[in-house]
Image 1: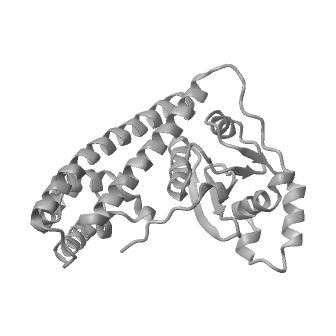
Image 2: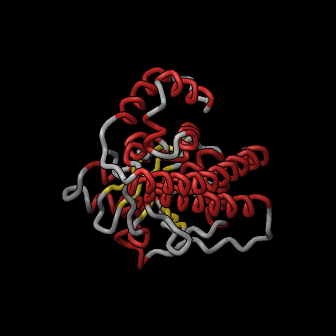
Image 3: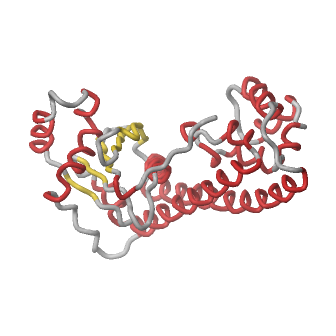
Length: 280
């Protein structure tokens, strides 16, 4: 069963290395352990991906994870500042000093790219000053960035609640969908399948043919046969079960929470479309 992990966002630090088409992202905890390494696209969908990765790591409105970067990519930095995220601009000299002073004691992976930038903030935050909050005139970019950040946070909160509920009565769904590296429960196919089968008994009754049909209806085009077979095996495996009446009641509760998650996912998608239209 995949492990769902989050951290105390007050003790996480993120670095990002900008690229022409993709940006490299890394995050460490308060002792320097790498908790995130990922690559995101340099478009509005990539910005949403970054916010989602941070939210999954434990980012919250009360403790947004600080972000460090060497180069000021104005559009992304302005968007992130407008959303209230602490941004540290790290110059190349500071990066070189940190790399040199930690070259012997630290692993190579911790001395390069976004992880290096995250570690600079972790070890020197008191001596660094974040960029001042954006105080320019209100504009569409700032409004979209704030709305998108809030929408991603809400979506993550709803997903976390659903995961907690599934752990109480529906472990097959956790095994099937809750791997955050594969998109978790916000994936359209996961939401659709759970809506059709909101309790373990209904999931176990889904045939491979029906699962293929549902995956295709959710927009899946690749590995449909493989994943339908896998889901069939997962849903028909043996797990601890609640009494039938409890499963039914929890399934009703799950259906309500899925409706909220569906609305939150639609909101995020629409905000991405707006950002792409105006700034893509």
